[in-house]
Length: 160
Image 1 (cartoon, rainbow, N blue to C red):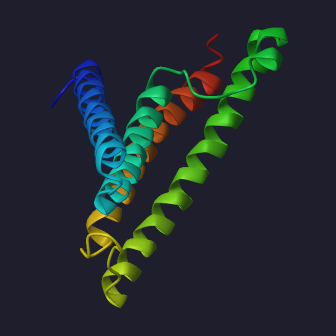
Image 2 (cartoon, rainbow, N blue to C red; image 1 turned 180 degrees about the horizontal axis):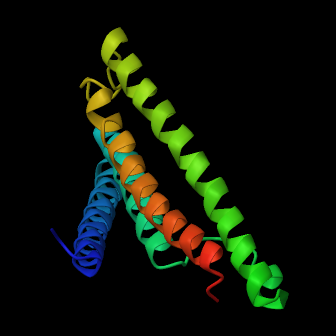
């Protein structure tokens, strides 16, 4: 099994590749539009898909590195014990959100499969895009669950 650092390196590398692909596709479309007044319709769909993947991967690595959005002003002014409780409360809320988010994304994907939705520009099934969303959301949920458990154990022990 990979260590956490190896997973982070893999995620970071994947983010760089996806972001580079997004930039190349978008720049290619801009150049084509500028020189020919035409546009590739598929580039918008692919760009949105890649941007969502980069965002989900970034969210996952931000939670692991404790660089996610939070109100630092309150945390920095709190005592160690209060900070620990606020971190645990924040982690609980984030965990519950991503559990619900994963379930709803899975339902969305299943609905797209059932109803046969196709993308407007390319004409491929939309679940081909959306299948990655519950998978990545599950990854985030497991990471949050692991952090939540570590915070719970530390809170019960009274570790600072």
